[in-house]
Amino acid sequence: MSVGADSTFDTVLVVDFGAQYAQLIARRVREAHVHSEIVPSTMPVEEMLAKKPKAIILSGGPSSVYAEGAPNVGAELFETGVPTFGICYGFQAMTRALGGTVAKTDLSEFGRTELRVTGADSLLFTGLPDEQPVWMSHGDSVIEAPAGFRAVATTAGAPVAAFEDTDRRLFGVQFHPEVLHSEHGQEVLRRFLYEGAGCRPTWTMLNIVDEQVARVREQIGDKSVICALSGGVDSAVAGALVQRAVGDQLTCVFVDHGLLRKGEAEQVEKDFVAITGARLKVVDAEERFLSALAGVTDPEEKRKIIGREFIRVFEQAAREVVADGGDGNEVEFLVQGTLYPDVVESGGGTGTANIKSHHNVGGLPEDLQFTLVEPLRELFKDEVRKVGEELGLPPEMVWRQPFPGPGLGIRIIGEVTRDRLEILREADAIAREELSHAGLDRDIWQCPVVLLADVRSVGVQGDGRTYGHPVVLRPVSSEDAMTADWSRVPYEVLAKISNRITNEVREINRVALDVTSKPPGTIEWE
Ligand code: XMP
Image (cartoon, rainbow, N blue to C red; front, top):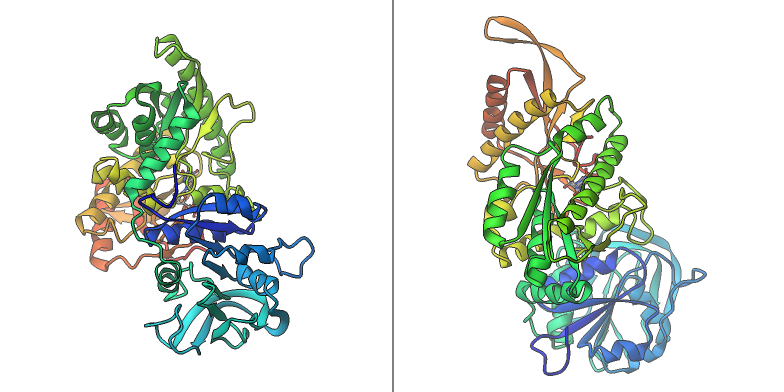
């Protein structure tokens, strides 16, 4: 997308020092309605300048500035006249490059820390409280600001916790303004962007759609592309976006693996097609998936099987799309609704462990024949929803709860069978209906209903003793699924759900509530 002085929006470069922070900073910049682009810290300064940035942000990083191989920043970056904001590692790298002092103090700070603003009328903190909680993660500290800078905040472990040089328009903070635990962090960032760098708040979701549409068009050219619709928000938005970019070069394939929730297959088969005009091929593969899953109880094995079958069915569907006529081109590309948190959790970010093989990233077979198109890879869930709204998808689709690709298959603890799926589907539909009815859809991130299929307990229903299964309700609130807390759903709503499930689903005689945050629990049980 063209960027320049005459552009309707300004661009901020977020220099990535190799941790997870750069994406979150980029997201916060977007939230301030400014366009951001992440660039590696190895990019030469001239190349950065060629992008005509209105501002530069140096992100946090995992390492000490003294660590061997720590990414370096030369002083030339600060002589360009482009307003620059150093965060955490970026703050320390900036200090060193400009002749200040970074040293080990005895007090490392990790987590919530009290920040005291010391600089009267500082540009970064004007209008904000003198004492504020911030999120820290550092061993080394800046003990002396470089010449020309004014120290404007301090903490117990960081003598200089923020500094600024308003003449040269250079700023820095030791804490992480991008995380929500830094209560006024977003405001500090906004003050840098608007007051420090003069950025205009003109970047919108519409721009994001245009940018992604242009990128997808460029990647796919005149080739054919296939999209895996899962029934979830991510694949629906990714599909709608690619449809907008390349129209009929796209064929959507919906593999009904029999692990979906009640009503979801219909939503894809009817609503999605009606709204986007996309060409859709439905493959009924329930039998195939259930046979492949027969006797399997291990969750990772289930995921691998589902992922593998999924791709096999796709490859077959792709061959059929070509044989059907389509546009006659070999299908080269496969759209995936991978989001940024999926990339991180599957170990795709730098320095993160493989927590779980999300089947839309980690579990693809090695002989995969497609090149992936992942237009949502840099976005977080709530941003994807906004993109979906911008593309005209209806609220029921855009505001659906996140649902894992392997579907109800991983919400049955124990072997997956048709009967068990039927039981869980009914219970899940009741929980969703009651939560929606209570107006809680937008407060609750998602509420998996988990069937403990191998557990039975004694109960009494009607006149008789029962020996039924429990289900667990797992309502959570979250911003991006990377961390979550259990939702305080009103007792009356829980009572209604519990009553209805035990009355309407014969095989279930107990409803339990999960009150664990993430971490230590994950959202799904598996
Ligand atoms: P966990 O259980 O890891 O889940 O806390 C985090 C979020 O990811 C969803 N999830 C998945 N989404 N494919 C997906 O597209 C998957 O394999 C998958 N596994 C978990 C989960 O529902 C939650 O929103």
